[in-house]
Structure formats: structure tokens, C-alpha cells
Image 1 (cartoon, helix red, strand yellow):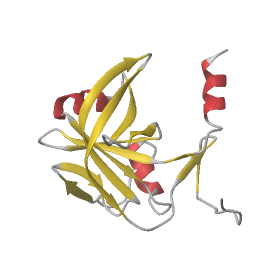
Image 2: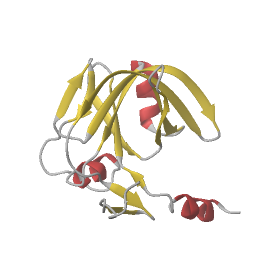
Image 3: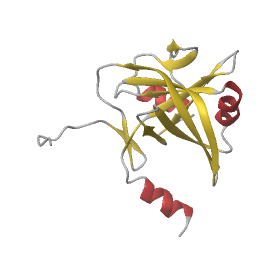
Length: 158
């Protein structure tokens, strides 16, 4: 199978959109990502996956901390900015949580200390120990088949 086919198949899994952030002591760095998951409730652990060629890799290794901000459907411009797709007009605002930057007004933010680093294929997994979190109201920004979208609730709920 070729890489494009694999990527197309993986694109059929709808995800939320996150921005991963860190601070190297001088500047705030961010990147858009959808490779995020919750790992454990006790202890509270999450995982992000970063391409081994991404600039963010060394920034997180150096700082030992990272934040994950879950974007709302009103923050597509922020996602596009950190994905290198389009410059955002105006400044991006951040909250500081335990010294880690997080996107202001995101649906939720989680900040972590790096607990483990695992190189797997062409990516590095960072398992983060959650040190702070924040929750807000709103609807999520989603990503499916290479396109942004929103959330539509079905009438049926379990």
C-alpha cells in the first residue's frame, strides 16, 4: 500500500482539532495536531504524536512541558495559522497555566510535564502527566477527510 492511500484511510476518522504549545523560555511555539488521546485516569496521562522532522519536537524535549488546547468551531483561523496554512489576522492570545501557554478561549486546555518519550516510526510519542486543565463552553472544531467542519448532535443519545 502506498502512503497516500494510508493517509486517505486515516482521514476517514473524524477528529477534534488541537493546538500543541510549549514555551522555550523566550518564545511560545505552537502547532496544529489531531494526533492526541487520553491514556489514563489514574495517574492522569495523555499522549501526543509529533513528526520527527517537526520543529516542535526539540522545543518540547527542551522545555519538558506541553499544552494541548481543544479548539472551538470559532477558532479555525488559529488552527490554520499553526498548521502554516494561513497567517491569522491579529495577535493570538494565550492563557498561562503552570508556566505553559494554552490557547485562550479554547474548549478545553490540558498542560503536562513530559512523563515518557517514545520514538515510533517517523513520529515521537510524548506521554504527558497532566498538571492543570481548564474547561469552557462551546462547540468543537472538527477535521474529516482533509477538511474542517463542526459538530452536529444526533437526536438519539445513549
